[in-house]
Length: 288
Image (tube, rainbow, N blue to C red; front, side, top):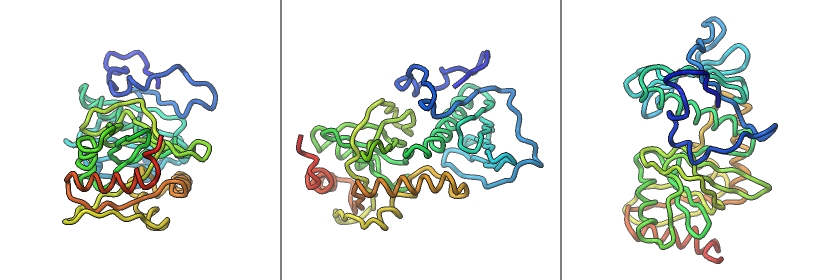
């Protein structure tokens, strides 16, 4: 990431990134570059096509397809203020952005731009950015997925309270990556309302979708149902066939190695214990 000389733009805008800072990569080690330059201008209107406007839950993001195959994003906050203009090439390996507004707006714009670029640039490397709350136990990571407000964080909190040896890896956007047929899950600089920015790694043990119910039970899904359950929780662009195909292929590889479940549950201790028994103990993850 590059910052031209500027009194308002620097790495202080991204405090959650500090645990992840490393030395400069070389060659194929560099996933993407993002240049922050407030002189960046919007693409000419006659050379871009509106894709759609997304409600992200904390603002809107406007997406345009450029005549060179790249994309333009305008990232707005919950008050409708334009915080960031992001221009990317087709595979998101070369990007630049302009930030706008006060310090809070600039933090919001840059953080969201960085998350967006990472999600799509990494899709070419068997990597997914997922919407989940992630708990770890005995070296295995267990992401809980669901629509916002369904109870992902609540179920993880039950594990932290009632399942010995559990710790929180990330509370909103962990990263899954396949390396030589092994599937790993990582903490990330993006963790929603919970400041859990940890540079940690675990084997991916299972993926569990939360379904509110009056009685606690858990079911293992077939591969087809597993794919359908997991896909909505992965950052993707359905209108970009190249990136979407890479994401779908990665999901397919993951569910070949990792079971996917639906936990029908109440927010209580019994739900955590039933889930732990099935996805951790019964899968042999309790053995050192």
